[in-house]
Length: 452
Image (tube, rainbow, N blue to C red):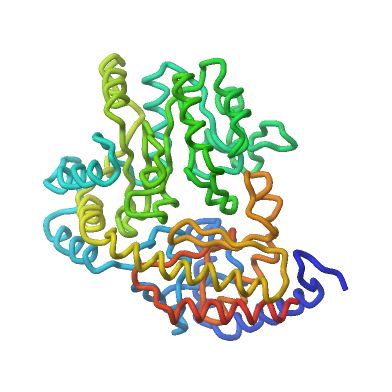
């Protein structure tokens, strides 16, 4: 029989057809809302990539609280997607809800700071070890602004990213290695400027390639996740970041660490836990408990250079920031999240359940003798269609199988479990229970049994 990733592919297609029919039959209200939205929303959804889920039409949410949500047809789900880390600490955390309600009575936005700004700055400095901070509406903007500051302060134009990286919608990073050659990503819509003269791309964990990319002294900044998360999880090899930082220091290149996803590794992030000393630090959606906001921090030395670059520049708009940035609602949400939600106790709970999930996934995969592996970064767990964890973006991308992902995701969804689209990532939050974990593992086991 034909096999694919270790499963019976003919049987998989029959299972997929059955699961699609089951999804449609059980969700008439979501189907009706999808048809209604299609009359006025481009592609029938608020954002075009919402069509990339595994479902025949959009699943519409009625309410979301803690580790669960309920759809328009009344089905309740254990949520392991959690807004792809936007709700990493659960949907609508109570301290954030209280803070938003209180602030809503006092005002939304003024383009001026309030007390929350001072408290949030102090909390960020204490938690992440960088003394100076600025704000943005999204991690995409924070990364974009970080690159601007790096280029302005160093006088260099080049940046380096790792193959398969994801840093939001920053145009500069949409460069991949294709057959070993830097190539502008074909999916980047409407980009008329050639990114290749200003963006260099190397494989993660390849110190030799990084050294060659930095050697001419023209690179302002390396923008990186400390562990890659969006092309499939790729962990740094022992000693990689120690040697990579030494290379950057010798070449006068700054390091910007994006922890929007790897904040799953602990309350102070992956960099703090593993001795990575960033010049710039970016944290997006989790920092406000799901409210749109992001932060980026500066080391003391780089902050002085950045401020001088601004003082030396002609007067006028810097191209950095928007009028809604650091609005009063988002600042109140960040204050509540940093001081009451992102606690050591919350992470201890999350780590214990994530370990239970990772161990259960590994045991299930082994029991069905599939050539898959499981990787975990704190509260974040992922299974991948390869026998050993990938060491770079090329290997991770080669292990992906969109059709098989969609089948597994839809099978789980029909049994009341949601995992992240685009890849096989699962998060646990402070409200996740052992029953939620066991529900996911039971459905996963049943899925693999049908596919083998």
